[in-house]
Image (tube, rainbow, N blue to C red; front, side, top):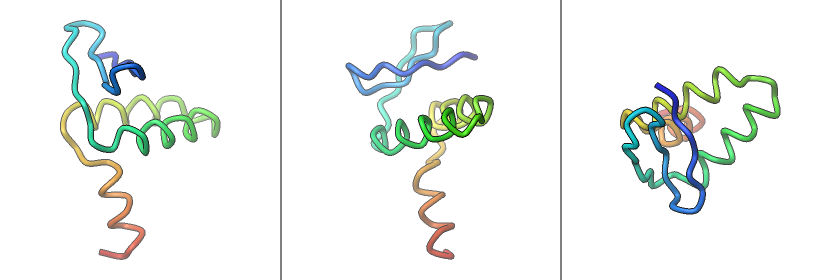
Length: 69
């Protein structure tokens, strides 16, 4: 599955099916994705997009871990 970012519509799109998801954490996710790319972790960046597309709350989980919850 290849997921791409549709910034105009604030969505993640499956390139094979055209299915879109509109995550609430879009701004934070895009910033995190850019950080991973800049840090030379493109595979991890791609995996995070896939995880969010599947419904995982990647950003919420990161916040909870940072708080020690």
